[in-house]
Image 1: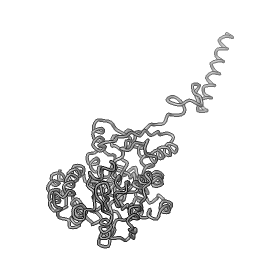
Image 2 (image 1 turned 45 degrees about the vertical axis):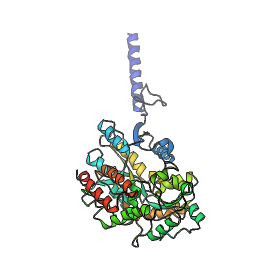
Image 3 (image 1 turned 120 degrees about the vertical axis):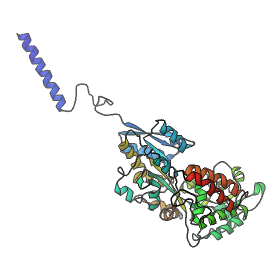
Length: 429
């Protein structure tokens, strides 16, 4: 009987101890230092972020990751690099079920992805404050048919870089920021001289759509009709003025090196500029970082004035969330940080892109150099790079035809006609 009584008392004490531990939030199996499943502290969720940049080579991405994870200890970011043919590669990956949580996407690809039902709409995730703070040039890049599908990574308004060493060596003064396109041509002529190893040129641009369109935009031109179903090169007067001007730079004024001539100085689009062989070239804010790293002497001016207006174009790279992302709310926390005040400030402070949001303070940035103000001013006046659901195929064709135009093998009129004729079946799909 006494043994039975002792067993009952022991059982009651054990039961009481169990309830006491439960009331205090603990269990007999837990320790304060344990983590993981079945413990008091969950492991952070790892989210994959796909980019065409290698994070090990870009300090601003490393800083963004560090600051985000510090502010969000429940999330770890794993950056995955897709270095070549990014847009097409990601289409294949998404179709095959390889779904990142967040991914970079260039603005000209957003319609293609969105209209193929590959992106998560962000209207219900982004706050009205976030949307209202976006610069006007950014808003068009993020929306398709009135729906927001992307958030800005950074903004790249185009400006004109001047090689100050070449100007000084030639005894040419840096023009005022109200310079005109006629002044630009005269300077380019003066700075083009020599032959063979001694040759130098006044201007150059790589055969990339953003640099070519920046000059078309300077003349107030455009690429597509209002409905996006055709191109307007042969019918838009301002577009033709820009095309004719670029043709003349190569074939009439002869102030530009060919692609082969420029390539002899390196495979970077600015190699000839950095070798003090090209005096002027269109670039963006990140161009300054490249020049600084290579000890290039340069300054910046707005695009030359045409008809009393200095006008440029701006490209927006974005962050998007795939439609099938496993944790859209967590994905948005990443996108909101990278594209919001904190992430955009990092990109600006480290010279990798202009901010998309007016919430970012540009005061310190503008005070660093006499010319940084031109980047900020362009945020208010730049024309967005034109986008189209079939833009990738059209741009490939356009660049191919440009090669013949720059080489003088066809006239601007023939170029415009060929582009419009080939563009019609591409754009009307």
